[in-house]
Length: 280
Length: 104
Image 1 (spheres, rainbow over the protein chains, first blue to last red):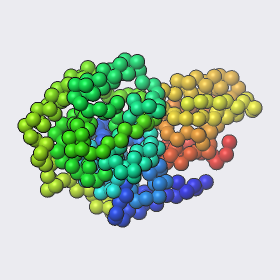
Image 2: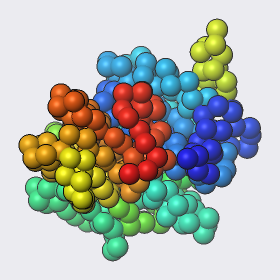
Image 3: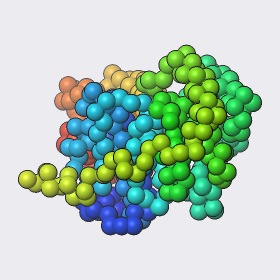
Image 4: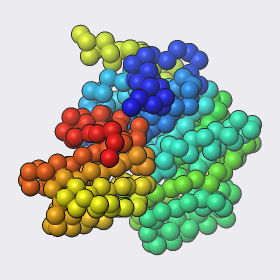
């Protein structure tokens, strides 16, 4: 049986979207060969069902497995795979993807679907209501969190207390990998972002505060993804180091300037290139 | 994820899954399949209309179940695929490996 959603997906898979692109979904990926195809499938069906022109960007982070090859073999014309020669950190992959995105609304979402793509609409409502940034939150009232270990809950809570009271970023959850931006906000924030690793989210939110952007924290459904590659101790050390680095960068005035100028932006592959490759 | 078993025909039970089918759910699914095959089941139908996401671990578990059914000269049927599950099977090229049916 062909449903409307399936028909919309088939059209998206085969027909290059025309400008203006309404939504861009950016997925950073590092060695995600095992997980990436189900994620692409779930995102593609849901986003196509919304009925607006949209693009999917997978920003590779120097994967050494078959992540890139698997994606390129799909021949989905509106899936853009941005190759990276080397591993630069999740923050660098998200930045490359966000600065290349063409949509009127930009989302980045983790490759493990721990926040299901169906939550897109919840964040979109806040952007439509006038916010510059909408962030998924596992800690806001109304959030649904499944399979998160007790140790990880304590770890998250501890880091959040540090962020709130030691760093002045007043959000219950800064690290959920599901955040939405207007193009202007994305341009302002990601061109200044300096942190390339795990705590880039924190820097982006710190900058949003600094530049008086309006940020909505939106409770989301979140399911811990088995096989998470996060090393809690390493992350905690990096997190604290990065908080100090962000403050130091601010004191030195490094956020007054654009750190990633437009001239250095990567271009997305031309629409239809994947199809042409497939039929050559 | 909820798993409901309908064994009106014990040689061909129907499993109805509801929720997200991922690595957290594979043990329960495997136990159910193994119990059915150890009893009278030869063919098994898995109804996936209420599953919106299936990850690689769950796909591997379905492949395992298919192999075990075929070892007993039976078949594993996937029925009433939701759109995301259908597309995930296509992208992973597993749609060609399974017997996919419209109705249970």
